Picture (tube, rainbow, N blue to C red):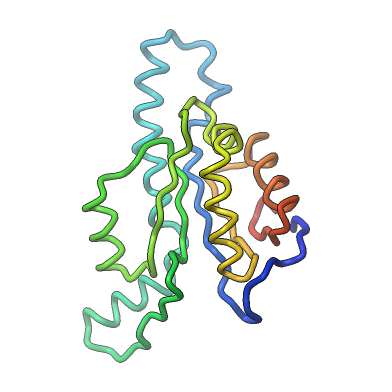
Length: 177
């Protein structure tokens, strides 16, 4: 696990779920032999696959949605006034789809972060976008200073991002921490 002191949240606060749809970044080194047209086509496909990051780490939300659909009793979601999940993608998803998934699956609030400008390396793009990175840090601190990271795969950019989050005082957890 990557270090950090834990931030300012209350004891027992739920960590911020940080899902990074870095599909394109993960496979970018393999694209060198392709011509530019094929690389553009691949990047477009990778963007669509990366959008699935919105649905990662859903066991509790999915259970609540199933319980609601079947009439089983379940505890109401507790809102802390901020999203419980941040999804980093190279392009914004359809807002209506995001809201419907949030409502029907009980995701507990989702914020999609799209770093600007967007290149082919999502984590490096995020590190260059101070506003987007600061927003993630702010939300993590509201969640107790702990961030649970899920990504398509480990890349040098992801490792640099996790290190930066730890340097900003967050406790980073997940398979890459």
